[in-house]
Image 1 (cartoon, rainbow, N blue to C red):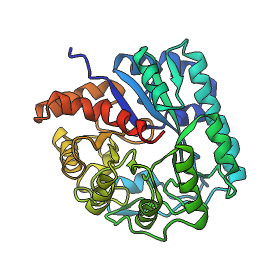
Image 2: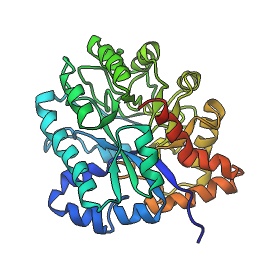
Image 3: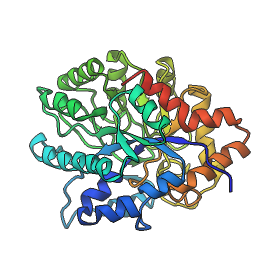
Length: 353
């Protein structure tokens, strides 16, 4: 068996699994229960050297809400945007999830560490320890005075998406729609503009994933940092609202930014199907397109592990090596696969956190 190239993952939702099943977190994290996409033993065996771990607030659901998963399985679809969640409702949940991340570090017996700077991340990984960056996917837990942003920064937050696919007081997320354009609503609010400026001042990386096109343009006009989409694909191939247009990719490239390829099958299939049976060719078509616009230094991995349906050919974190082998077989040189797998994220984090 070929040893996988070490990799850094731009986005995962492992903390959501712990939020939903806190009583079994020790088994889920330390032993692995055969479920989901990540756990410590599988990460270690797969060459997972580090990643961005998301704090995400699930939207409340009612008994008569539509079955969104079923709707996405049969495109075309146009899912309604969930309602805004207040900071008072989101804050306690975000705190619980951050607590789980801190527990993961304590329980790992030195195998996993939350990192608060790029030099600390590089040092941690050089010691054979998995490095974690704390991320917030949707800024619901932060109020307009931004006091909570400073509190979260002190707690270790180094990456932030102003929105998930719902509105916040800072901006507007894209609805899950196929086919559709990411131009789905207004741009950043005044509070959102202040949030971007404060993130730049604090060296908190801003994640553009889930942000609509006008919000994207507002960030481009404001930011002093490289632009980043941690888990997004090419709209030219799969015209989902969640994917990036060629114009957006060109703007990211102008800032020497990075896009992490999202493994979510709905954003890979050209027809938007939520079908885990898809070929390496389908995935690599997106990778080729991203490389065309972003260059060899601008494309990375952003799996969305434990937050999406991913290709059967990958399966879970232990399948990243097979993906790397597919890239090599596709004609990418080993140096390029190394960049995509780990180097481009580390370079980006050197310039943002």
